[in-house]
Length: 439
Image 1: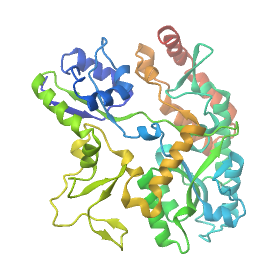
Image 2: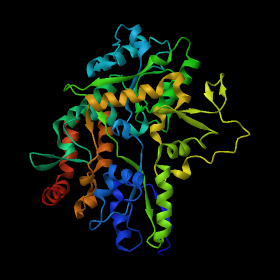
Image 3: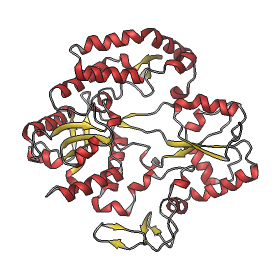
Image 4: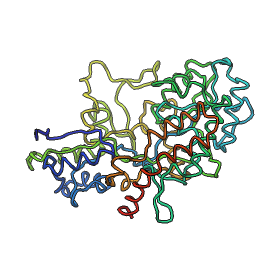
């Protein structure tokens, strides 16, 4: 209809780039220009890469909503945490939390066999992951780090190749199947839903667990588990840095944005300039904490390079709590079209009691310096060609086949190679497009 709001906040993935370009070419979206007079807006846009990858005819139309994890190089907190107290009881603990793949598996296996927490043979699980990370996080991610890239295809020796055809991919599938068949991976992991794996870990029934263990997630687990498990300390739930069989550590470098904001082509320049002036202040340090907490001098104040709450401290909950008679904070959601404040978890005084903010920050920085990073490829993700647009990389089909192999295959090599063969003709069409158009 052409009736576009002044600002549209859109949960856009890179796979939706075609829709976005159609809207631009239909004249619905306003070009982002004239922002040099707003230093914080310009700094924000200069730091982003996705807006460059999504330019249309050399012009920018997208405002990427930053994830606010630039202070850790956009490194994700995805990875393993483990029951360090159980590993210590078994005599397998490494105080620096660095383990080989085999050592990690040994801890998981012995926890299943010896049940050091006394949770019961029918309850204990050695290794598990959150539902959205199954099954790739329990072998494939680690075995293929540095071998394949993100986006389904990898360029090697100047030519593109389908990730699924890498020999290490099949090796990883077979390793995950072995761990499942031997009862080391939680038997219900393939079928569970929602946050069931997270709840099971929090109940004290999983030895090694993979998830996005961002600061608030870690704090929540440490708080609940230390309250409910006698003798458990926060530091007994720790990040586990696991070396792959190829001597590498794997970590995820996230996309830099969560969503995007688009501006209506009908939005007057004067209104756009007023909005940019407001957003320029919102991107200052004071604006950042205002978006996250509330009003400076009432809700918070600067504390060196960090921030402190001005609310009463509740000794029972170990939190600073907003007084009930305070004007109600409207929340940070209304500011999301600018960007989210995920990085605040590294600084939040309300989770200092478990040291989760610092531990999450230290983990991400360690990964940034030591790990092989699985990073987004914006050029590949936004590359458009008929067969690539039609077939992608068969990611869903790959996942379904892998799960079936893990659960029930008697010949993983044959089943996987049969799958590869079934997709060969279509995949080769995509690869021809990539080799011709994405040098």
